[in-house]
Structure formats: C-alpha cells, structure tokens
Image 1 (cartoon, one colour):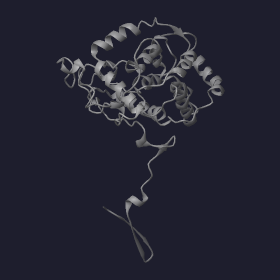
Image 2: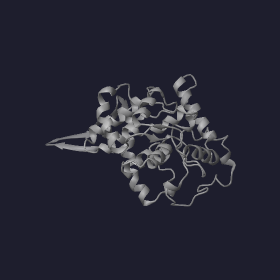
Image 3: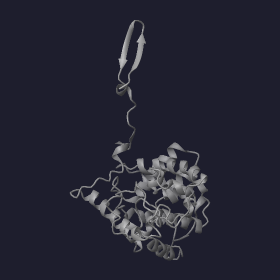
Image 4: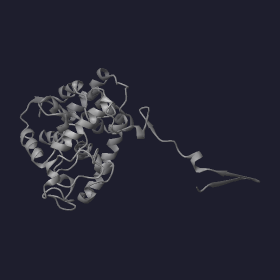
Length: 295
C-alpha cells in the first residue's frame, strides 16, 4: 500500500492512507450500504416478502402483460380523485418490495418532500415532486397485485440487464426469455432509440407519468423525468441499458440521481408531522395539479 509522507521540521511521519479516509456517509441513521439490502433469508419475513414480490414481477412482466395493463389503465377512466385524496390512500399501503421501510407510503412521501424542501428551498415544484412521486401506487387499491405496481423497473422486450435485483434467480419462468423477438440485447428496439421509446415494466412510475401528462400538469419536464424513471435502478444506479440512451437521456440522468438520494436515503422511523405540513403542500397541489384528477 502506498503511503503519504508528512515532514515537520526534522521529524518525518509515515501515514497509512486508511487512517485518514473520509468516513462513509450516514443517511437517516444508516450507512449507504445498509440501504437496498436484497440478500435472501427465508427466516426473515420482510426479506422473504421482498424476494417473493420480485420473483412474481420477473415472472409475469412480459411485453404482452405490459400492453394489457396500458390498454386498461391508460383510458384514465378508473376514478376521479384529488392529489390529496390519493396521498391519504397511501396511508393504507405498505410497499411489499421495499427492504428499507415498513411504514405506510404516505410517511415516505412526506419524508422525501421535506428533505428536498430543506436542500432546495426555492424549487417548490421539486418539493411537490417528492411528495407525489409514488402516487401511481394507488393502482394497488384497484385489483393490481403489488408486483405490477411497486419495485424497480426495467424494459420489457429486450434482454434483461445484469444489475436487476435478483437477476440470476427470478426470470427463469418468464416466457419472453425464450422468445427470439425479445431475448437479444436490443430485442424489439434500436440502439440509441431513447428511453422514452422503451416499454417499461408496468408499475407506478409509468402510470403516474401518464396520469400527469393526461391531466396537463404544470410541473416542469424535469419533474416528469424524475417520476418516470426514479425506480429504473438498473439504469441510473448501474449503467445498464446505456446503449439505448440519447444525449438527452444522459442530461436527464443528473435530475434522476438528484431525486434518488431523497427518495432512498430519507427512509427512517422518523415520522414527519403530516397534519402540520398539509397547508404548505395543499398550496403546491393547487398551483401545479389542482382539482379532480382522472386516474
């Protein structure tokens, strides 16, 4: 191991670099490597719940399945509901794919939004993005299994990326893996076609993005990009599927990464005072996404 030499007059000190390395960052009382622990332990009910959710997702998320869900949900005729009412519904949802939190999803929404607000006080659109980013999970209350609502996303119709969660053990029963139209590197796509032209596994990211576009939100494009790709971890955390990316996608990556640190590293047992915070966020809802929303 190399060493650093510091001289003080006639005294020379040899330093081991490991003695003055910067400590690993701590978020919400946890080290970075303590988040997103997808190790398998059948004796741990949360780990087993997470593993089972991803196994079902990776078995059933096919091109045919995604097309069927888009045909059903993108008519936006399921219900009409305000953003606040949708958030309140998340008080009854615990994400079965999440190894980092067993709290209702509305708590995570406010944890994310408040941390963004603290770091970016002048970007109110960003605060609201943090608050609503998981609202697509309302699908779980309308007959969608959680494996078609929550969890990391990935493109269907092409070879699965190396860094998908449980990649080596969960895709064996997915029929697209045996379909020559879909099981090659590019599958049904072209190189550099752009992420917007990929068909993503069906879930809350894509659904909420489409809901916001349909309802003509005033949120900026940066917010829509964060929402659409915040669960696309194989891409934004590991670089998978970069061969589909355009220059615009790589520019957008910085926004997704900026959002991700608030989405992931704010998960803790500390619960914000939600009732006290409602008036501020109700004002943002009225500004960017008011009234009844078609879902």
